[in-house]
Image 1 (cartoon, rainbow, N blue to C red):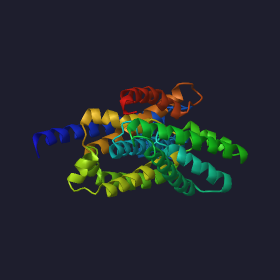
Image 2 (image 1 turned 120 degrees about the horizontal axis):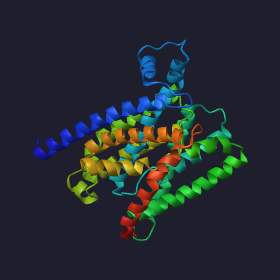
Image 3 (image 1 turned 45 degrees about the vertical axis):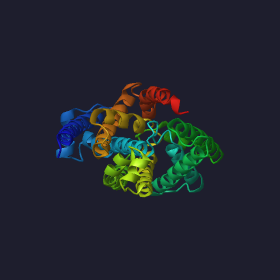
Image 4 (image 1 turned 180 degrees about the vertical axis):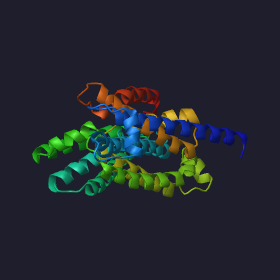
Length: 337
């Protein structure tokens, strides 16, 4: 191992360890803070020595722990999804919320709720995967037909256009079939309805998606250097892109079916990660997962503090961070138009 790789490995390991410790501490705060504040010592007792006869223990085990774990998993999945999208497309503006993936999932979910109202959470997750795929196909098809081919800004514009179209259709269907109330909670983005079933779906989908993402991480690093460089090194770019798209669909589909339209995590976190660790996706992917999980846990805590005792949609908190960052990136990439 050369000195540069060794330094990167040491730095990446330290960042991961610190990130995991911060996540554990933030989860403790998230579990203890709410309509009824609970001491951290009580949280630890509920985890280590659960007593079903103690009301705070029941609140922690059945409501707050699933919510905190779901926040970490959703944030991690969205961050990794954005990192993979940016690596595959070499587009710094790529993220699930901007590239039509989230709105495609919403479109499929509203159709499922309208025509199959008794659908299970597993069915909703599957439909969101299909819808996310539809959004990706539409965005890249429109972008490919634009004059001058695909550029980062054109892909972002195509994503905004497709997202607006799917959003309008989804709202029309929701109003007609009287499922607008259900979808309004989804559009706001939040973790209030999460439970242990949600955690299981996120763990299964996240585990599969993250393993596949790590499997192709080295190939994404090479592909991010350019298509010609990648082919020159003998890489099957079509296979890498296909596997990468599967990763994005699985991770985003699972995350948005559980937590709704939480935007900009997949845009902001990969940029922060590359600034910290460099361009090696073998480190970008796991560190993005840790930082994404940490950001969403903190955003969920902030959502409960802004207008206590009422909850602010967590999607609004992430948008406050993400929108200025997106505008900065769009301005930096304006020459790509």
